[in-house]
Amino acid sequence: MSQTNGQDELEKPAWREIISPQEVRRYYAIRHGVMVRDTILIWAVIAIAFWLWAWTDSAFVWPLCALLVASRQHALNNGVHDGAHFLLFRNNSSTSGTQATRERLTPMYSSI
Image: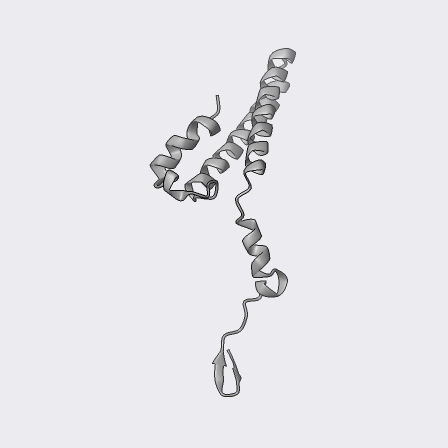
């Protein structure tokens, strides 16, 4: 702490010199278009991986497809995690509690 005119003043955190509070708030903005786009792309990658595996029927392609599907399942789980922290909807009363959030989001974000 530094003293200015006899008064104690808290120093600014170091991160405020790099990024402003307005920029930090921008990361918490709810962007439904991004969520919908990402969900569609994730499901498209899963479908393509299944199609590629079935079309080639190769022992070398199967592990790559399995890794692709597993990574996209993890991405879908991140969407459920955001929902559990109320980062997907403006009206938090419709998603009160983690059980309600899980019931609402699981059909959309669950994998095959």
